[in-house]
Image (cartoon, rainbow, N blue to C red; front, top):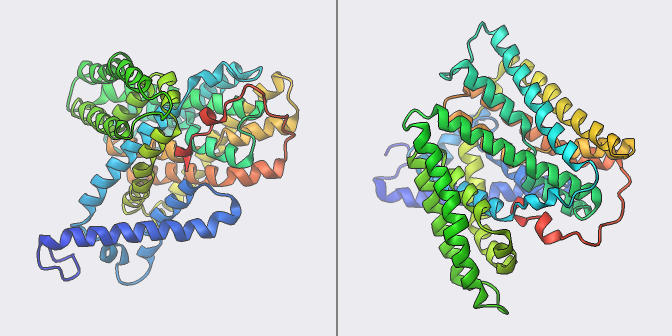
Length: 433
């Protein structure tokens, strides 16, 4: 293992892995302190740290630092750890995503949801078709043209519910009519994107049939809803005062990992299993279990998520996109941001909101965050995107999310007082850190 900086054998692998994890955590903390003054969520700082530790920044310095700090032999272990972290994170997101917020939204919420899905779908389709037209039908990867077009359209839909919930909570508007409406639309668009992506994955899997893939996803939902859910309800009923027992969080983590492994064997990305399992558990059971149980699931998830970004950053070199990539980035920013902004602004104005409120919601709906990153990485792992396209879309997610809070504060929309029936615990999951 010559790349392990003088290590004599595989016995040194755990040592270098632990050193790598320590460096990842410290890097995230340093970037977090730097960007704290701009009110950036922790996930953005972790993404930036992941990119900085890879070829995009350290790779520009002499000495091949990314390879020295993260030897090639260590990287498969880091990738495995990162996969566990993102699976647990998506499980915690699924646990806390409550689509009932759509019903509690203000007037015009349904129009906001529909327009925030339809217009970005059309914009993404147009951008993908434009790419095919200018590249003579070559998508730049091994994917068929219709798969590439479908994926880009799906990627344009995303508004990251977890990150947006954290942003609204920090702004103190997550229980206001504007906050509830925006969170409702984000939850619905996120779920639509995952649903469409799961269908696309099912029909493009090279290892299994669509029937096997869809059956595995349905099995996770059925098991969570009709087997695990009722058992949880009975278990929690025995601890009416103390809340859920401590061991319950560990059991749910084990079940989520099992669900992820099952759908992965059936040809779907592992994150689908944990996300669907979390979504399928009854909402009343999760609320009765209390925040303590969810936080015990989030702690390992949020600890390991930075590893995911470093594993991603080691594969991405922003400097490689070149002029063509820069032009593609400009096109996708204009098209995706414009579609989301137009949908949100028009919906708010139709519902009687003023211009500042319309532009405020339009800005918030363009926060793509971690959800977009995970979807992009899924497309890259499936061979739908080439490295340049992956980098361009990750830059889109990063730029739009970084600008969300500063632009929203600059717009300064008038925020009506919070609704008396709003439920902050359901609307601002701490998983969005």
